[in-house]
Image (cartoon, rainbow, N blue to C red; front, side, top):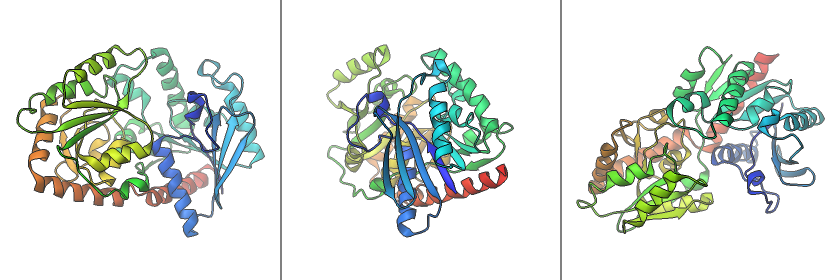
Length: 385
C-alpha cells in the first residue's frame, strides 16, 4: 500500500530552508523515526510518502530509507485558510494522483492537513493532536476567527475520515458518535530521549517546557513555587518561547527577572530539550488542557519524574504515584507540594523515574507506535473498500 502522510513543515513559517531536511513537530518526527526503524529491520513493506509545503522553488524529494520518502513542495497561490486552503488542496490532489497514493494520513486539525485530506477524494485517517472544539471551551484561543474556522473544518473532517487515531481516551470520547472508527494510539517519543543517561544538576533543576501562554500557566506556577522556595533549594528553568505581543508573557518575564532562582532558556531543537532533561530532577506541567503532551513523554523516556495537572489525556500517560504525581487542575499549590515531595524524597524520585522509563518503553517507543499505526492504516483501507 502507498500511504501519504500530510504534515506541516515549520520551515514554511520560518521562511527559510537549511538543507533538505524538513522541520516537523516532535510527535510527527518520532512517528517517522519509528517507520525508518521498521524499514531498517526489514518489517516495513508499505511505501510511506511524507508530504509538506516549504519555501522551495521546486519539489524536493529525500529518500530516507528503502520505503520512506520525504517530499517538500513549493507553497502554492491561494494557500491560506481564508481561501479554504484551495491552492494546497489542488497541489496535494495532483501529487496524490501522480504518486498513486491509496491512503492519506492527515496530521492534525490545527492547520491545513485535515481539511485538505477531507477534500482529496482518497480514503484517509486523521490524527487529532489537539481537539480544537474542546480546547476552545477550555482556554482562550486567538485569533478567534482562525480557530472558529478550523473548528468548523475539524467538525467536517472527522466524519469524512475512514477513522481517527486518538492519542488519548480524552479525544476518543470527544469524537465518539462522529468518527466512523477510532484507534487509541499515543504519540511516540524520539529514541534520543530513551538514550539519555541522567546527570542531575546541583542544586536540583525543576523544568517546565512550553510556550509562555495563559493555558500553560508558567506565571501561576512560579508564584506557587514561591511558597516552597524557603524549604527546599532548587532552580527552575522555563524552556520555552514568548508569543509576539503577549501581555501575559511580558508579565511572566518580569516575574522571572525578580527571582534569582529562575531562568528562561529559549526553546530550540530536540537536542536542547534532551540536554536539559539530562540535568533535570523534576518536570512540572501545569497546563489547563492537554491531549498527549510530548514534553511528558520525553521526560518519562529520559527517566525524569513528572508533576502535572490531571487534565485531558494526561491521566492516560501518567498513573499518579507510578510514573509521576497528578494534581487537580486548579490546585497550583498542589503542584508546588508535589515538586517539594519529589525533591526531598530521593527514594520516591528514583522509584518514579524507573516506573516512568519502563512505561515509556512499553507505550511510546517509536517502532511500537509506528507498527500500531500501520495496523490502523490497513484496517482503514479495508473499511474504505
